[in-house]
Length: 315
Image (cartoon, rainbow, N blue to C red; front, side):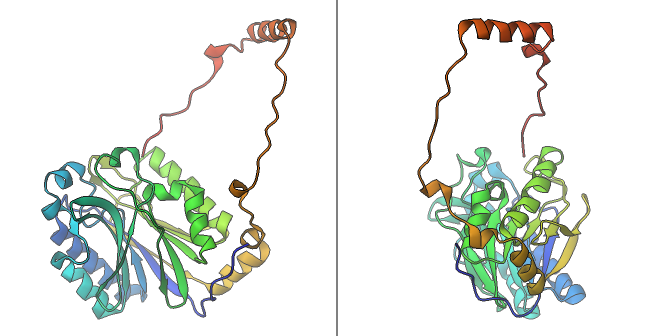
């Protein structure tokens, strides 16, 4: 059973920002992010803007590997982020923006939180690294949540969201929403995003937010379609697949409360990983029975050649 966090008293307007980053150019990308923060505040009174994975640097492993001081964001504060910090301060907006972050010779895939006073407030490091990232980046060692206007927001980055345990940990920490900057590609990546995010929302009765790239970054042909799902797993708002865009939704405390009253998964939860598990081994078929089964398979054309294979998996 989870102890409930203090309940938010009013709605929170959130935007998922999608755009195509300039490869390895932190100044240009921070300027783009700043303009989108100002747009979100002016046009929709948005309080929190979420940006894609590694947006400030681009998803550019070879550029970042070759020159991490220039191509990655420097931990703790980086003067190149000043346009974004100014935009947050001027508009009273919180930005959660993806970056490759360099700290004492080590690299992390991070979500940097810029507070509404224009300061670097926090950093969450991706815990579940994608296989292509593991030779360059270090995994994060702790989850991350931020609180804005009474809303507790769990942070995730792309592949984190593919693990149900990651969003569940945020929900058990009292989070009301799960905010993810990702890189999902055309094809299987789009398919994954449309399975994972409604499931994370429904399974935990939380809002889920995905900010994805458009265009190409680091060789990945991304699928856009940034979106927000409500606590029942239903789509609340969705962007297109190719253009720079802001998608906005209002997180509603009453809708959240209703979802949790109907679907009581968090109050009912017991962690099966902490409890014993029994295994029963069944007897194998006798030799005559095994022969009969094989004959039936052969007679009905159900041999190995009839088994269909699915598409290859990828981002």
